[in-house]
Image (cartoon, rainbow, N blue to C red):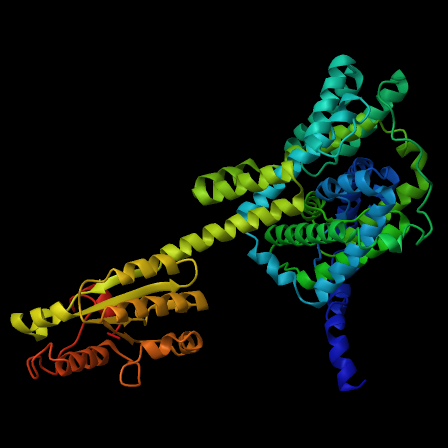
Length: 584
């Protein structure tokens, strides 16, 4: 292989499964098989329910769980991740189905899969770490609320009202239920949800969702409860791969929904993988491989009639808790669901929709971590604001807008906090080396300021106001050794301040400019203004000597009055700050 081809294929090769993955699979096969079986029992009602909620039917949810679950397990970046249809993705898919039709969901899923593969090749997985925790918590809370509201029509046994806003649909369903109460459906939904929530506290590893749904199905069949309609007929097996759903002419129209689906798939999958890492010791996922695996899963799932998939936090958590140690567990989960699709489709089709709604209602409740929410709200006002805004935006708008709003507000508040760290402080002259007369002369004509922290666009305006309000002196010395960051806006603000002081007849000198900041200052023309006699000064004493020379030549200070040993200290020599940093 030529070096050029090798460089092109290296990023792809780095994303493929390795021998280590195979070795991990062989380590604890029995434990992984049992964990996979348990996860499959938990995933079955969720796959059915999310398929129904998406608008493509229960068979779409099962196809996604089997195809996407298997591919993501093989090619993903986590040994413990379990993938499939999720509530968060369903929230995005419902308006797509309403606006473009069911076929558009399949096209969107394939487009999103291609985007995820591209993100993996671009090594974009590492940027997940920059999503603040309040955004994630608010996002999760909002999704839980949306999932719960989506189940209201089926839980109440009423036809789903028209509309694509979940709050409106849920309210109309409640109004319809009030006109025509259906206690059977509501009773089944509440019973299933209660069994799941109580059972999860009693025996977390037991799949109470399956037990509750089986019991609800038996009750509905034996009692002949027509008021609790079943899922409906399911195909006995996965459909053959097909490209008939692709409408090439509509790809441009579906680009924005595809971006939303890809963004959500990346966010939720990487978040789920991080949760799995935190629940174990020694497990670390590869974010780029995880994006690659999810991309392949979303390319393949639509070919079999499946909906877009992501890593599933609830199923992944069950996988970890039941002792999974390798990808074999997630593969087993997909294989068991495939067997159910082929062997038990007639039985699955008899499950009441109200029972599935109860499963998803319980899932929504369990998604809300009250302890984490309480901790975020109590941390700072900024964290509380970000969490609430993200949750409300998730509920009122959509998930992608919610994340964008959360990130924007978090970024603005972070910049505000960083900008507050920038300080401009006048540095007192030390009396130790001067007589009272000499000190009075210096203090009357020279003032030194120390700039602490970042000098950038968020802090620039306040800095300009503070600096240009300098006292009526002849020389201003800017100590810049503690400027931690400087951008073009900060440099322009500094230039503007120097020009204003210069017009007032005040000479501005700078000391301690860091090497990396010379280029920024020079690019906007500020560096030349800070130089005196063709140079800037490394230390504050050098700048003071240059200031003294300037004042002597201007006749402001008599020559020789101030001795050469003059220096400026930030604070008295015995202070903690003076011991931390030499004078510059």
